Length: 191
Image (cartoon, rainbow, N blue to C red; front, side, top):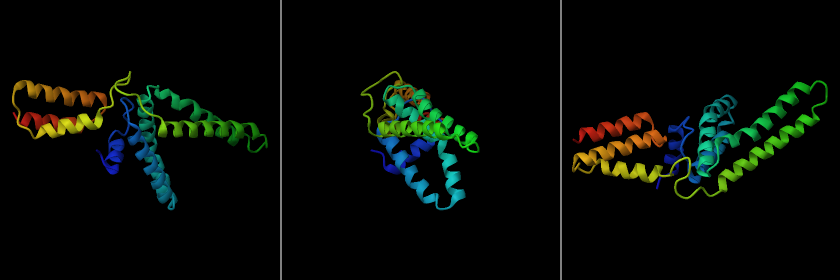
């Protein structure tokens, strides 16, 4: 079982990985940690602003992977945030004329839709087993392979199996390229 810090670190390691799946725990840990960190770092405006910019991409990526866990397309994120953005642009464009009321309602609708989507992502149960976005096996598969790294290699088939499993994890976005290369080097070194 991964610790909270490891779960948060996993999201940062998959900084811009939009493929694969993220379990509810990974999404909840990342979202709650960012909420707390934003509140604390927001006390220093420039630091809070920089932090917010840094976590935009991994925040979107983990939300897309969480939607994949629910067997939904990542494009579901687009509509509420597009509505919010259009409303905000409309407010800014019409603020001088005093006719921003309709844009306020559009922005509010987008904000409410975005909040509802976020709450749904926090609490909805993911798809059991594999779905069209893959299987949610990151922790168990990674732990299993890592545990086997220290075991002596019994045959060429074992080497091929470990290399294939590491390659699959990289292709699925479960591990980064550097983690894949490290695993690959470790397997080859044990030959």
